[in-house]
Length: 270
Image 1 (cartoon, rainbow, N blue to C red):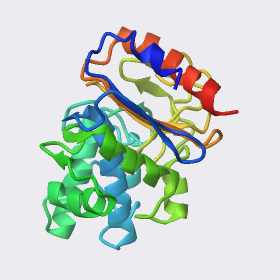
Image 2 (spheres, rainbow, N blue to C red; image 1 turned 135 degrees about the vertical axis):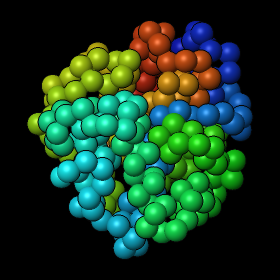
Image 3 (cartoon, rainbow, N blue to C red; image 1 turned 45 degrees about the horizontal axis):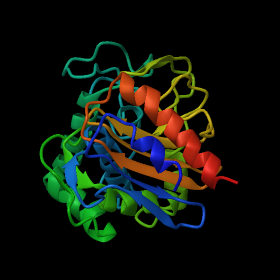
């Protein structure tokens, strides 16, 4: 792909990327078998495992978790009122979209308590094993501590495109905006009103400037991580992109990533 020439300009010598085009063909750059911590992209995997738990009857999106009136759905959508990292809620439920690692830690503990299975094992059984993500494992918090590689994350991207572990209806709910009126901050990116989020994935919506590209449709969903990781799927273009950079997300990524993503869509979404 011509767009990969742009990735050679990134200040990240260990970059690996895979693009999935509208026909489902993959286009790769770098060593896609190299494993590293994927930081907050972990939340997408944790969320998907949570939807598996809901569908198998272990819990429900309406299950109370955390502070008064807070549910599993609120925590998945960062509407539970918890700070980035902190056990004490800072606002009432559904007041603001506050991106929260704590919320995801509450989710994983909830699932472990109800199933009697450590969440690292539950994630392996629910997501990694059935998708053949053989290099992936959880080494700590379900909010940020999954170790994976681009090859494995491509398998998960294919699941996002055509769900097999959960129903299409559940996947559609997960990847569309929930609690649409909420404003909030995407850490390291900016404040948005509204700050669109699904039940796990961030939704592009009208956010600008943003870590996604200007050519990404409003319906594009995905996540980025502070370790320089990203994954998104654009349903309008039927194009997906996965990348690991192993360089801390910063201004460089906000500059280079959108240019690259726009080039990918210019090349493939015709």
